[in-house]
Image 1 (spheres, one colour):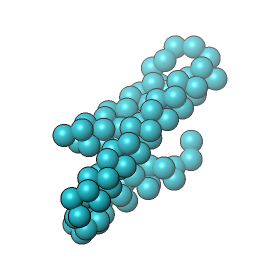
Image 2 (tube, helix red, strand yellow):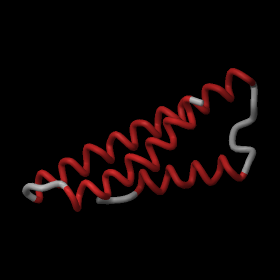
Image 3 (cartoon, one colour):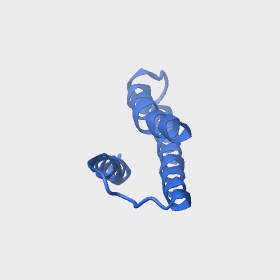
Image 4 (cartoon, one colour):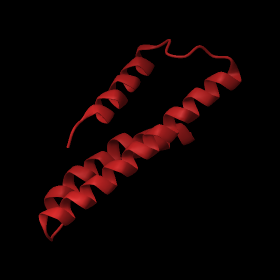
Length: 86
């Protein structure tokens, strides 16, 4: 359950909040970019915690890693998110 919350809040909720923050935060361009960066960093951090929790759970239960299409799509999504340049 914790993994679902971390991955959803990281990649979905906070990523969209970061996109909206850049357009809706009043102030200078530098402040907008700083808020945008901070929220994106939070999204990345929560996603990393979620990935770590999945990896740890699989290790403890002796489950193979990356054996479903869902896991490959999730990892691909995370990699593309981490490679984006702002």
